Structure formats: structure tokens, C-alpha cells
Length: 286
Image (cartoon, rainbow, N blue to C red; front, side):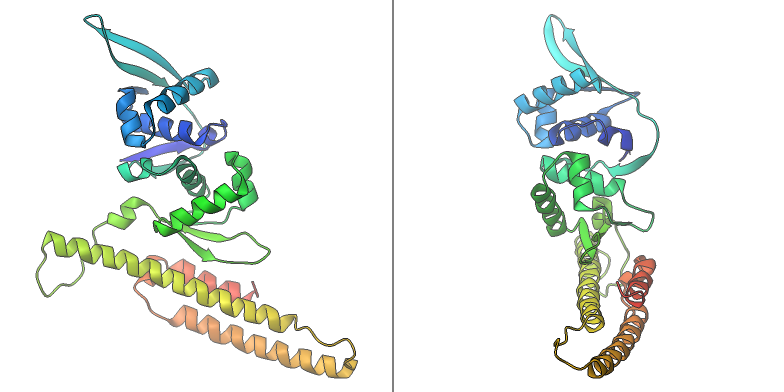
């Protein structure tokens, strides 16, 4: 199931737990009304019942939702939550149980990265922009991104000093999506599941290897372009050394571009634009 999460919701200033509870209510809602027990929300979001009640009260005070108590035979039953309607830009979120099992800061950071994700699956927001938008400190954002990387939901697709990092964002559906692969032992469900896991792991590993290689050669090119030379060296000798370094840097750029654009991994079929973008980045000297 996919949820339509509007950018306006992220701009409401909700806390991480409030945002996670609201997204879970969206997954349970029918015509904007979610009828669910607080205990079930706490179980699915892996937070305490008191945290759920505090989050709902805070969101009701902010006008994001309204809670209506329901009774049957004089006994209190599941509350009804009337969710507010948002308009404008939105992005899609896979409403999977594992997503709501993430901690509040990790879930919020994942939503923020999804909101910046383009059609090619790439996003490049700065850490400062994420911290301001989510009202979290920089170290919390860095820790959340590391957890997302360990879960293979995010891959750092470029490590550029002085510039914003480039992230490739995956969804849990992409991790569990079935892909038919040739098998000599038949097509049993357990073997196909293991093949799918291997394919996704191999795909992410290839991206990581490309990123590390591209980052290394980019640093080499930057070093050659800004080679530190002794101050007492004659100007003529400096110009000779700098010209030689520039020529070497140009050759390195050409070789690396051919290597990145010509190497044929299975992942290139999934993300062809990424590899050509890597080559273009190196040509531009980034």
C-alpha cells in the first residue's frame, strides 16, 4: 500500500513520533477517518501507549487531526480520528510494517529524503536543510542516515567535499520486489526469495563500489589541479609542473569516464542515468 504524503505535512512542525503516528493513521484511514485503538498504534509504531496519546493530543492542538471518542454498550471502544486534508505537492511512501518500525528520527529523515527524491531516485539535500526542516540537530540527522544506509534504504551515491552529498533512495518494495532470475534448480519460493535478496544486495554493493571508486579518483583529480608546491621554487619550474599535472588529470578523467560508462553491471540496467551522471561529474571535475 502506498501513502500520499504531502510536503505541507512536513512543514507543520510535527515531532518525529507525531509524524510517524499520523502516517500510520493515514494508512488505516477510510475517507479521511481512521478508527483504530491506541494500543494497536503503539504496537505498530513500536512506541509506548502514553507516547501515542501525547502525540495525538499535540496534533489535535495543532489542528492536524481531531479525536472523537466512541462508545458501545457504555464501554469505550476504538477512537475515531478525523484527519486534515492537505493539498499541493506530495510524494509516495510504501506503508510497510517495517517502515513504521523505524525510530522516530530515522523515519522522519527517511520521509525528508523521499520528499527530495527525483524521478531517477536521487536526492541531494544538505544536512543543514534537513536539520532546519525537521527541527533536529545535525548529529541526529547524520546518525539517522547511517542507520538508513545500514538498512540499505539509502546509498550515498557521491561524497563531494564542499558540496551536498548525493543519495540514492530505495523503498522496502524495491528490496522485496520479485525479479525472475535464471535458476537451474527450479523456481521454488524459498530459492526465488534468496535470489531476490542476492540481486538487491549485489545491486547496492555495485553502487557503493562505484561511489567509492569515483570519490577516490575525484580526490586525485582535485589534488592534481591544486598541487601544493614549495614557495621558493622558480616560477618557470612551477608552471612546468602544473602543466604536467593538468595533462595527467585530463587523462585520468578520460580513463575513469570510459570505465564508469562502459563497465556493464546488472545494476546499470536499473539505474542507467546514474552511471552516465558519474562520468559527467568526473568530466566536470566535481
